[in-house]
Length: 233
Image 1 (spheres, rainbow, N blue to C red):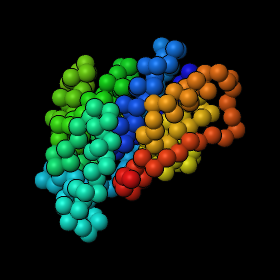
Image 2: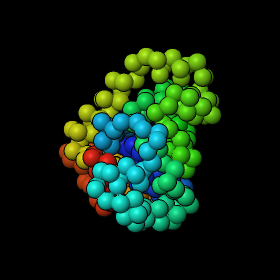
Image 3: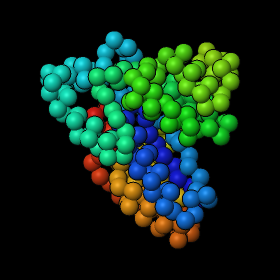
Image 4: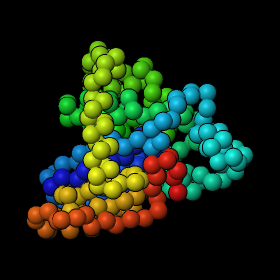
């Protein structure tokens, strides 16, 4: 059984949703037969990398509010992260474009290391406060999971995997995906947002018990997601 997941490294609910999905997968009796495929999705792809700007300052400027108000606005995300043992510090998160990080995940996919790359990039961004658009950071993250540093550097200095990122995003458009995380189970059932482990487990069980593909996706949605403009609610 295949689970396709569209998400962005800059999306807090994508990290939270990953944890909730993993908890569901651990309870699934056939977990060893589930193939997880990560797909690129850029929130606000025109974002300019600015290591001098943290997330709260960026949000305050974008919304025309104070940094204190931005912190209050995002507290529910910090609280949701704690529920799955993730500890976000919005004062450390660096504003960075995620396109090259998505390219790194595609490189990792060719080595069977996509999940490891996704996890380490999310950690680098939300926990460690690293610049995920920095070549040194990406090389260190890739090396940590077992990629060769010279292969990463070669990719970063070329156009490799740019088309793969664009194809993922085009597929998302065709499916009508307007926010992430977005999980598709066997091309039949979809879960939108960082829903509960119980919801993910139900989708796994339902997909496993039914064969064939549907004419359209049966989507379960909730608000814990980030929209294409980068707004997380």
